[in-house]
Image 1 (cartoon, rainbow, N blue to C red):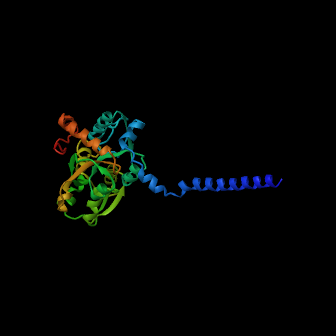
Image 2 (image 1 turned 90 degrees about the vertical axis):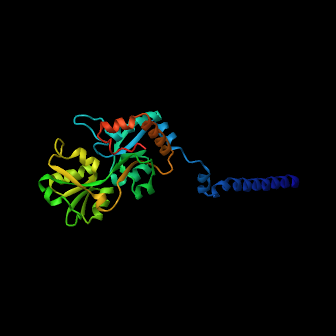
Length: 285
């Protein structure tokens, strides 16, 4: 009887020992910092991500001649839109254009709501710090758009003090207007800035000259608006350059730059630029 009791006691002790060892082994991984495990994993390829889902989502605003629709059509066209279609094709995926609020373009990228920003985007210091960006592909400057019947008030201005100026929020135009002393009226897109001026709710707008040349004056929807002044020169600044924005560290940047170099070499970029009147602005180096 004593021998049986001793055997049972020894078995119980061994069970407790095994249980304790088992518990210690299971808890070890949970005590390791999760960050160390994540940092050891390789970063996901953005190119593989886009190809895996089969669609390149391009963040845009309505901006002729870059991204726009002809009256009665649902198709996005323009210099940027046409080249985005060709880039998507080179990746073996479809393209989807997503209108965004310009001020939140970085958040849209980082949340993967879009895969790139391709919309006549000026490569400002803020953009360069927040995104992975392509090589520059087009030049531009900021200009002042105002009612034709008030032209005498605006021609030759060197300051915008005392004027209510419509600007796209978060844009290079907003920076220029503020630097020249304007009271800015932020709106969602440059096209909305033109609406403000046409409606008389703002004195003028500061937008990209490429849009002003396409969307104002005789034969356009804003025939009552005109533009003048190089506001980059007014600030002693060089011309701006456009680039495509991707997520920081994205391998789509290299894929784009390779694609673009090939399309410059075969004449596609030049031909597309000429179609949209951008032959003097496109960078072909």
